[in-house]
Length: 227
Length: 265
Image (tube, rainbow over all chains, first blue to last red; front, side, top):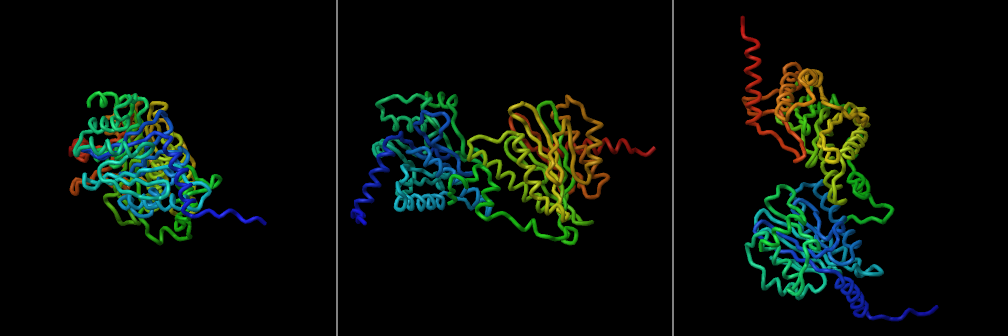
């Protein structure tokens, strides 16, 4: 019987992280930020049907970048966890923090125990009854959770997008201004992103029980020229 | 966080998810005697079609034997944006069924990214009523009405069900519960194919009035406490529940009409 080669744990983790990061860097990024009425998520996505941003629960949205089938699995698992919790207890007991922790646990587990890590980064956003309660959790491929207060960027080139966001984001922006900032930081001012390649959704406090709402392409165009 | 192997995945089916997680409520299947337990019963609900959609209405009373156990029960509830469900029968299982049904429609919509068709929703409810059959055999019968606006066919549609989950689509109107005989007679007499929304609401309000007049388990409008039947209209723009002030006006008119009718000679 031959002995398996010894690989140092540091090396193994590093290899896995590199693998996951490479997969994520291939895809387009997305940003989320607070605006007057809640949180807006702007994603670059050429597909009309394969969504990156979606609804999890009344006040919670999900956004993922990287490998579509993997973050879609996570999306469905999140909807299930939220609906089960709301059914067992009450709708008020479903919150983004515990959801983010479950995601982190799952991603962490997969990162260390499975053959290959998930090539995804996800964002769980929740709007509070007022601006002070808004929360965003950025969860990495290895289960690291980062909570973000005002804005977040995930996906390929997220670091430079986050720097641009730090410059351009302001408190109490209207929806049109926020979307325009989102598009500007995604493109970096170097290229034009057509409206058809954008996927925009909001969690808005004024939208009733289910805060999540998609901004359709026809609604998006006037908002983009408004900025 | 629930995660399933490909063959085990319940898809967008929430009740199936509950089963796989082991959360399915088994209490309803236990043997008990509904009459001895004195569980509250919910009564008259109606639904009718008008030119652009459907109107649903239901009284607010729940009874346990000869006692009124609740005066403000809501038996007509919104199922999702374009449909509603009305329930007569044992209040406990009925309300639980409605809760699960609402959740299932929302769960499907979120997982799949699009709503079920109206017919799909009716089928789903039928399966839930059938699931309640063992409890129905013990006297815990649940008989809902399902109505909504069919976005594909651009028309209002309505269904009633029997205790075995039998699903019957009705053309114009339907009533369920102990006061259904009176209520459906009122609607039958006043029904035309081209009713406007306003006329349909009046007719539904009137049918609950007459049912309450004859059936002791059905509650009429309670002006003293400001409790009015739940009346809602569903059209292409979705579900709208009528204000109590609007219903107070309508019932005021009915009261005057009945007064005039019984003027002593």
